[in-house]
Length: 249
Ligand SMILES: [Zn+2]
Image (cartoon, protein in one colour):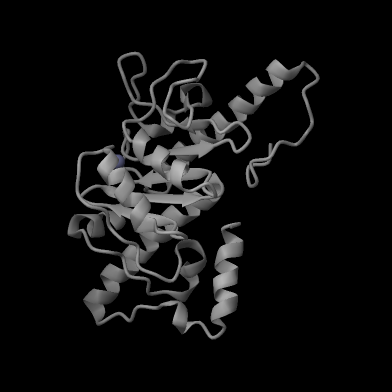
């Protein structure tokens, strides 16, 4: 399986279809488990189960997602997660994983994004320290730096309505805030949600979102930052095309 494209290699294990499907599921689960460790390493979670991530297998449509900590599965921190801990659901949220583990309480946020954005195959919901400043303000993170546009677009990252964690209202608000081509949204008084065609892309967007928030905070302390937009690019059509190509739309 190719992590970037989500496509299979076509090389079977030679042990039959069932084994191949199990191998595929294990590979997707491993991507999600590793993403939990990356979130810890990059400061996108404060530890325990704050924030979560998921990927969609484009071939089966199944979603591999971090689990909900429970008595059966006590999780002191995301950095202890392994592939065996990953929950699997279908596009309607029904648990279909062989381990029968429950998904994170944020499942609906992930589902609404996958249901409304067919080009998205990975979601990172972060609790990063800088984006949470804007989530607390319930204000958009302005786009200030020209090098972030490939990841988050040349537009502010908008903030959702405030609501219960994991509610449909907040989930749909996040979809609306991203718009047609957006890759990130703030969750009011909570965190951020970032998307990509692959887990690597979604994680990049999450990191750039933190950088954008940090730059916006410090530049506004030092002076008056100047937002950028698509009109600031010399070749706007090329900029638009680069943006869409990057996202594989
Ligand atoms: Zn959260």
